[in-house]
Each structure stands twice: as C-alpha cells, then as structure tokens.
Length: 137
View 1 (cartoon, rainbow, N blue to C red):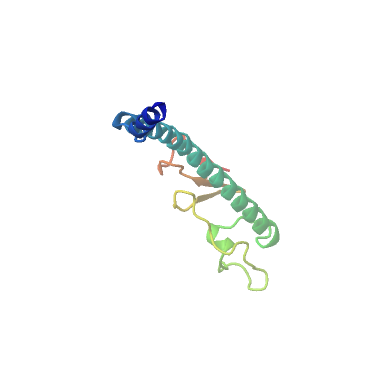
View 2 (cartoon, helix red, strand yellow):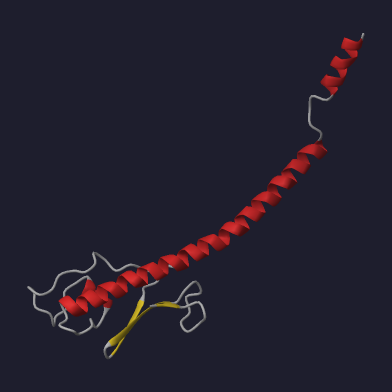
C-alpha cells in the first residue's frame, strides 16, 4: 500500500509548475543581463587599447621613414608609408606598411606634422574631434 502511495506522489510531482519555470527564466535573464553589461565595457576598453597599439605602430613607422627614407624629414601624410611619394627617389623608398590601418571605429587616423614633430590621433568612440575620449600618440 505504501508503494502505491509513493508512486502516486512521484507521478504528481513529475512535472514542473508554471511558477518554477518562470522563476528559472527570470534568474537566467538577470544573469545574462549582468554578463552583457560587464562585457560591454570590456569590448570598449579592448577597442581603446587596439587604437593605442595601432597609433604606436604608426608612430614607429613614421620615425623609421624619417630616419631611413626621409633624410630626417617627416612624411607629409601617412600615405607615404604605403605608397611612394613623388618627392622620394624610387631606389630610396620602400613601403613601411602594407596598408594603413583604420581605428577600431572604422575611421582613418588623423596625422598632423608640425615642424619636426607629428601627431597621430583617433577621435575615439564618439568619433568627434577635440573631446575627452580622443586617443593620441
């Protein structure tokens, strides 16, 4: 008789109630929301670090150009690192980069020459120049 009663109790308890299913779904949504929020900041920091690394690579290429090709002169544009400028002899020029990188927000890097110094800049996540999120060398 006891065996029969236990079987009925287990048979009645074999399915989840709607409340239990809803509770599990709410817990999953909360955990997923926290995970997405945390990863969102991580992706943005990764893009900023990528921009800094690209600017460093471009800066080193400009300095190499200045020493090896430009006879102490800086290139007038970043294009001079990829294709031969008209003011450089064919035998003296060689490509420093295969192609110019874009910043992580798919915008070109800005390059400015001021005498013997230069600046390479990304406008950062907002894409607007002159804001706090700009990234420079």
